[in-house]
Image 1: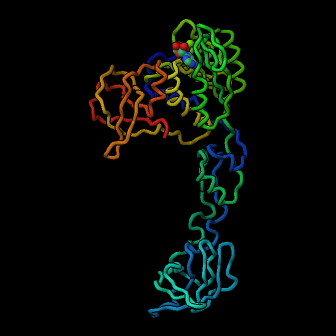
Image 2: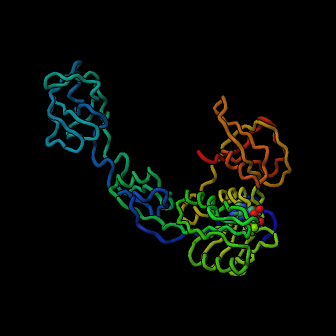
Image 3: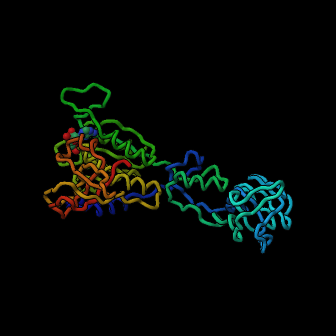
Length: 406
Ligand code: AMP
Ligand code: MG
């Protein structure tokens, strides 16, 4: 059990090392595959487009027919709309009227857009001669058979699912959903919606952590609230270790008298407990019981919110099989106030970012940064990062911010 302070990067490296990707896969409809992780490379088995086709509504012609003619007039041989095919090749001196997406007729080598023509009873006047191959979308120009279209480990979104559809696939092989358990520990906690004893507070971390993890499309199992009682915690952790891939608890990981979480994980499995040099945050327990990974977040709501985003989300993404574990999205901003603080921990200050006249961002941290103040996260639209070695910032200095919802 290491007791020295880890930087966020060190903690992330250790956490991602412990987080092993699940192996089980399943076949799901593309309509249910948004935000799931692809379990095998998708290889193209048909060309897209499957044939040369017109990129415009216009006339398919052969540019050879227009040579040396200053006002070309071509007889219209027929009409080709999308979904049909010309049953004969283009004849010399003629044009096929053609619609966007329709297959090019044989012998045609360009399309004149309709705007550059005028029609004249059964014939067409070409007002602007196209270049050879102009307005033709070539067979396999987008996708050729054998191309790797999407790599294993990609989180699927609309664009990937459209690509799969264009290959004729209605299903896709993805990693099974990660089963994630969530529990709040603390004898002082009452569930919202239930009655509260005079000495209790309403619990808020489960819904927060659950919402953050729902964005990652996990299968959530709510283990409710458990009191700071060794026997109850032990029983719950044993049960959880048999049902989940990852268990996320909040509370009970500090050094208080009733902080049993890390001891019980150590007793039933193995534990690594870190002090991470972030603020809010600090205590973070990572352990293993049977095949389940345990993440112990601090109980303080602001700290559990920040550590869930900074540490649990990357762990989850890795375990879901995502090959690219995204760095948080950070933006540069100019701070609107000056600030002094004790250096040492990386601070994620609750702040408001607004667009400035130059098109960049201005950021204003809240005056109250106590991690016990819940309203600081609801009023914030970003976390402003103050690096561990910085003790002073001057108005106008550039800082990095992590937008919360954009
Ligand atoms: P702990 O990490 O258990 O020492 O808790 C730190 C502080 O956070 C204490 O004031 C707890 O009452 C509070 N707390 C712990 N868990 C929750 C929770 N799920 N919801 C709201 N407050 C909590
Ligand atoms: Mg507690």
